[in-house]
Structure formats: C-alpha cells, structure tokens
Amino acid sequence: MIPNSKLILGPPGCGKTYRLIQEIKKALEEGTHPSRIGVISFTRKAIEEMVTRSCAEFSLEPSDFPFMRTSHSFGYNGLGLQTQDVMQGADYEVVGKAVGLNFEGEDKTNIDEGITMPTIGGSGAQYLQMITRARYRMIPLNKEFNEAADRKLHFFKLEQVARQIEEYKRNSNKYDFVDMIEKYIDIGEPPHLDYLFIDEAQDFTPLQWRMAEKLAEFSDKTIIAGDDDQAVHRWTGVDVNLFINSSTDIEVLKQSYRIPKQVHRLARGLVTRIDGRVPKTFLAREELGVVEFVWHMDDIPFTEGSWTVMARTNTYVRDLAKWFSNTGFKYSVKGRASISEKLVANIMAWDELCQDQKLGVERIKTLYSGLPKQGESAVVKRGATKLLDALAPDAEVDMATLMADYGLLRGADYAAYDVLKVSESMRRYIEAIERRGEDLLSPPRIKLSTFHAMKGGEDDNCVVYTASTKACVESPHQDDEHRAFYVGVTRARHRLYILQSDNKYRYTI
Image (cartoon, rainbow, N blue to C red; front, side, top):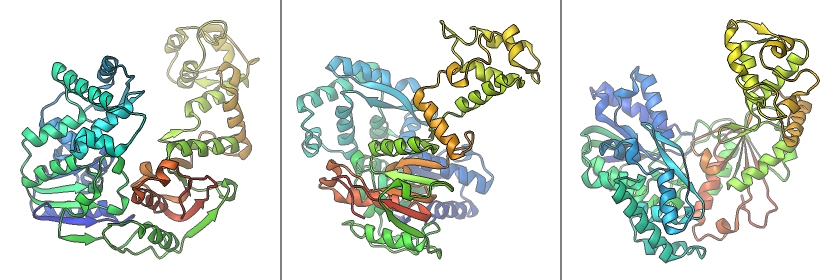
C-alpha cells in the first residue's frame, strides 16, 4: 500500500495515457515545475509515449522532464553509472565459459542513454532467466527452482551460475540490470517530487514495486495507473496483487474509445474467467463492430485495410507468416517487413537499366551496395561506388556508361534476380505479391504479433489465433491464458476474427 496515492484502472482503449497527461497538465497549471513531476514505468515504449505527448501538449523539451524514466533508467542514472559499468553480452559469454555453458549474448535492447540490455541465448539462457526472476520476485533461488519444476535444469548448476555471475561482477566492478534496481533501493537518493506517476504498474515485479515505493516516499502525491486484466508478464516475476492492493482510492475509466459493441461483448465474457481481478465495467463505442469465428485463413478478407494477426507464441506467429508468404501478402513481424524495401528498389533499378533508362547517382549507389563484388559471380568491381563520386549529384547514367566507366561488369543479358542473388523462395514470394497486384514498395498493411508484444496497440482489423501449447493449457496459472487472449481480442477497433485451431492444445473462446 502506497500512502497518499490514487489508483487509476484503465481498461482497453479507455484513454489511460490521455488521463495521465491531463493530470500532468493540471499539475503544471498549478505551478508545478516539470522537474518535480516523475513518471516510472515498466517499458521504454510507455515512457517515450509519455514524454512525447507531454512535450507536444505543453511545448516543452524532453530535458524538461528529467524524471520520466523506466525503473532501470532511474537506477542507471541515480547510481551514476556509465555504459562500461553495465554487464553486456560479451561479459555473459565469459561467465558461460567458466561454468561450461553457452551464453550467446546479443546487445540489442536499448534502454536509454545509450545503454543496451543484452539478450542471452544458448544453453545457459534458462539458468540466467531463473536467477533473474528469483531476484525480481525477491525470493530464494531454491524456491524459484522448485516452483519452476524444470527437469532440464539442475540446481547445482543453477547455484554455480549464480555464484560465477556475482564473482565476475565483483571482480570487474560491473552491474547487471537487477543490480540497478537493488542498489538504487539500498543507496539511491530519490528526487523530491510533487507528483509521481507509476504507469503500466500491473507489470511491476515485487522488486520494482519496492523501488516505486521508495520514490513515492519522496513524493507528495502518487498516481498509479494500469489494468490488472492486462497483466500478462507473470513469467518475468510480476505479482499483479501488489498492483491491485497498491491504493484504497480507486478510479475506473468508464468509456472505451476503441472497442465496438460486438468485440466488447466477447471480451467481457473472457475477462470474467479471471480469478482475483478487480471487478470493473466499462462502456463500448456506439459502433456495433464485427466478430466472426472462422476455421481457415482463406475466410478472412485480407485484401484491403490494416490488419494485425496475433498468436500465443512466436512459433505460431512464424506458422502464420508462412501462410502469408505462400499466398503473396506482404506483412511485418516486430517492425521488420517480409520483403526488403531496398531489395525491391534494386530489382526495379536493374530492370530500368536493362530497358536503357537512366538512373540518378544515389539510386545507382544503392544498387551497387546490393551487387556481388567478389569472385566469378561479381557484378560490379570493388571500389566502383567511389567512382560515382566524380559525378554531379543530379547526374543520370545509363547501363552502357556504367559498364564503360563505372565498374559494372554485367549487363542486360542478366536478370535482376540473378545479379542480386535473390533466393528461389524470395523469387516465388515476390512473384506471388505481383500476381496479387500489391505495390511492392508500399508499407505492409498486415502485422503479425504475439499477444504480449501487441499490448498497448490497436488496429482496425484483428485476428486472434486460438492455438496454444501444452505448457500453457496445463499450466496451474490459467489466469495468464485468460489475460493473454483478453489482450488479443481487445486490440480491434472495427472487426475481429477468431481463427479457430484444430490443434490439440488450444484456447476456447
């Protein structure tokens, strides 16, 4: 329980972020300086949205809000850390070698201030995840191990990994991402704030709650926002009950600006399956909307409009991607398009050259960057791109000139697919897109996602695939499944399709 606090419950599409922005506006109008307004959240995405919208609303700069941060960023900055102080993928690979496990480290998840959170794969990944989860839950390692009941893991190896990580950090004077929070709680000096906003608070682990409570001690007023029905990260150590019981002053946002009546009716049936939730009701939009149950992808009208197709796991997302590839639809997964815009542009550029058309210098440079430059398959000489620098920026050149003076080794006798080394499967895919009549250069209208990755998002048209896994169906934590599928169905603004699975393990909607 956080003293002098208010809990705002924001059901899907009810304008939770807008409500928080209005609270910030009220604070600023009362004379509160932006530097005395803090926001802490689970994800960088939530913080970036809050900063962007606050700056746009009040004509301020991000630097005016120094305390709008993720929990890790509060720790990183509050402890005065630098990039070199933080454990990265290469560090975990060293640890892995010491304990006889493979830690495949990849530094790709940016937090802010230039620091990155390593993504660890390989044989040691599960051990590291278990250690991290125990620390976030603030429980002994043996308790986490026993509850996980993973027969592929061994407790003595788990302890060995934990000891080795701590020894490595101690010897190299480095911090991991849990340390940032733990040590901030112990020795950090929180800013004195007039208002502290805790956003997406349903996704906080016990350790992150401890950090939030420390920040709240130095704040005059705390506003907590989230939705217990959308708490889908229990596997990271989240305890949604800490969110539910964080305040006695509770406000439920009543009107959804996203969900039409038919989708609302379906969602209401799902959410009531969740045990231990805060009872709440909210209103749908006036639009009736569409909900349809189908058995085949062919029964869904993907030919126009914006779509998001969601599944329970990344494996099922990949299965769905195969169908879109085979049928000639462009799509994106995690922001990456199924067909490279650069590849399409280069195919078009080569075809235009083969038709005796001239291209501008920048298009030629882009084309050259995609052409082989070594061995018998070379299409352009190495260093040929530099020769183009002698041309005027607005110059246009044809294929004959490129072959004579600018290092191009092959001409119109060679097809674009061959010179660009396009795989057979990609050729078939491009041809299928062309047969469908879609513009190869336009952004994909269709997005594929897991439910978890789509939380906070929305689309005009959505598909929820009901296939699940043995582990999910047989899990003792069935509320996790109810919440995940609830998140999925509540992304739709107009039309929702439930794609029924004949998989042995599936969720019943």
